[in-house]
Image (cartoon, rainbow, N blue to C red; front, side, top):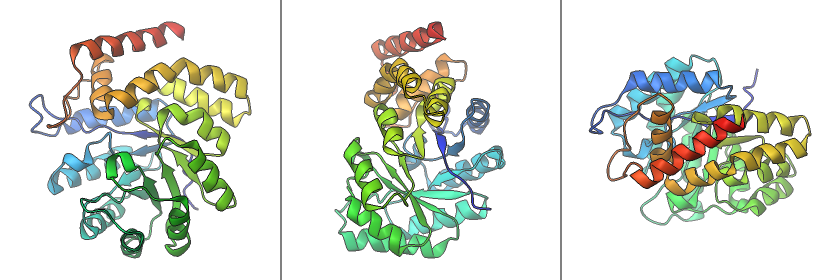
Length: 297
């Protein structure tokens, strides 16, 4: 049976010791359990929120293996395997498949600007190395590479196991274009928190969000309202959580989510340097946003 990827796709953090030097795998396990208890339909380790780009190869493997074992097929998993080199991404993709990932996510990160031919070959090589689905990830803000819809659809056509697209440009027209030019046959997923409602209306199959670490019930209620076709309720639920979603986006995913987890009883350390944790004014603001949402329940 083909794994279905839909709904709230929760992104994990990578907890560190207080000095940022050591992995804290038990805290990672607790965060995964909280995501599952919160009702997420899918868990995605080692993305931007998981600071995958800041881990050594050994650390990356430890986090990937531990995460997949902890998830234990309770929900599907999508492991981010992005790397600066094709060889590195292939190694990570194979490792993820060997340890039970249901899919991998690939962001074409690069120091040098990549041509369309180079991007296509990157996905071809990864696709040829594994048998599980690949989620193509477009996020020029972090990768420096912006893939136009036409290129994305070419990759989907030419690489059999590239079967879904995560779009994080913050441009809702990209999603409409994917739906139109892909003739509704290419599942796409929203990666920009403030676009969650618009993306679902545009046909997104799911919402990839770190917010599920902090407000899983609200995220899930929004998705269920969309499924039920109750757009008025969906709109009300979306605008209730929008101030926090905006704050998470502007404050940086690892910093805001790690601070928020600490405020909700799960200390997970700070981001790895050079990324800073939240400063005191922003911690106060985040605490206020979380308190307000608790009062609105």
